[in-house]
Length: 496
Image (cartoon, rainbow, N blue to C red; front, side, top):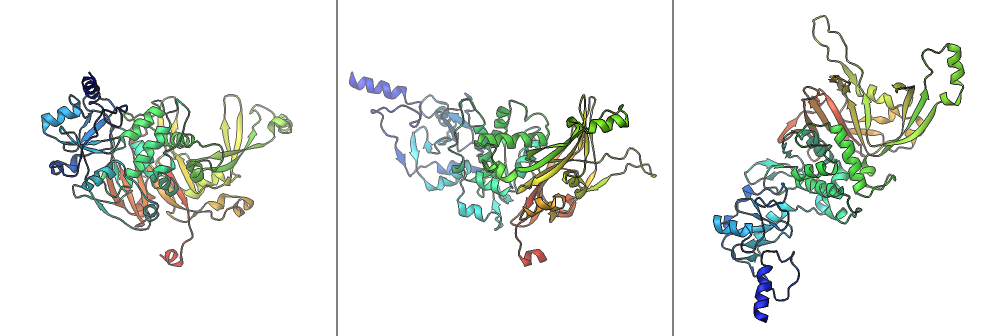
């Protein structure tokens, strides 16, 4: 009876992986082999680990294996499991456990130990050492994919599943913010984060980290990355506010995404509580003054202005990005009956935050005059140029072109003397430029990225990556810009 009981226990647990099953003393250890005759059947060109890790037959996420011959995912390893039946039916023998990163040969069911498979393991889970991260912006490295395509790590396309280009441009831009990138390239920085039960935002951190590591992976099998798992986490954590199948606003997505990441990293109101706040958090004073009613006489207005309700007040307000209003476009055509493309300088837009310029804000009952005074500049300034005006009937786009230099913009010009004295550096260089093309509700998005190791600019629109002249960037309808605080440059660099 003892032998029969052992056989029954062994049979019941054969369908589960050894890491997932309860410890059974009668279970014989899995055989390991360094000599597998099927390693030459592995087809690296079909391997794609960017998609959700679930069985292609049962759609389960438990105990999933990737067939390294055809690239499909299957559950289990024991007899009658989907992976086992696939190996017998198709003659595919080499499988990788997507959770434990261990290789197995089926149907013989032994573990494969071979260093030639390390590149597959690295593509599934890229890792970076501090020494490698330190030279990412110094050494220009060109890699080759399995199909022979050359690419630069960090400058690779993101797949557009249907209408997620508004997410792609934001993810591409954030992947070049150095402290954010360096933080997420090291998985140990966030692997141990604990969140309250029921809080799904921690998956956002994990998926974003995976995406950053894949974008900067120098050993990719293909020259592009699919953000499928990242976008699924966005849909889940935003409670379907942001979708893959319908176009969205990158400004709204960026605002939600940065705040969600900050909270998921256990961030607080302190400026140093997360890598998000350390990189992007600035501060300003918002001065506000109530406007007397229009129908009041001058005498009544003067009397009201002396009351406490009409005295100017201010509040200290933190910000993750600045939203600048564009001047309204001209209503009439020129003498050649053509629409004039208006232009405005970047400095004119930034003057909205100098603490002097006022703007009227209307509410249902009352009107206010507000002015914004910057009191602290972050290391990275995200500037949103408000191109879209929404009303009850339609969305209107302002086509005004912004004139701006690529480097050396002094944000200190809009600071007060006392505030400017507190900053060691107020000069900023452009790092990323997100552009909207087309109609307000049907347009597309693309992003310009500075590749620091080469000093070249690249335009990325989904899978398309092309080099672009810096002069062309200023001719686009910029929507979101990320400016990086300048570092000390040598005389040689300054002369160039």
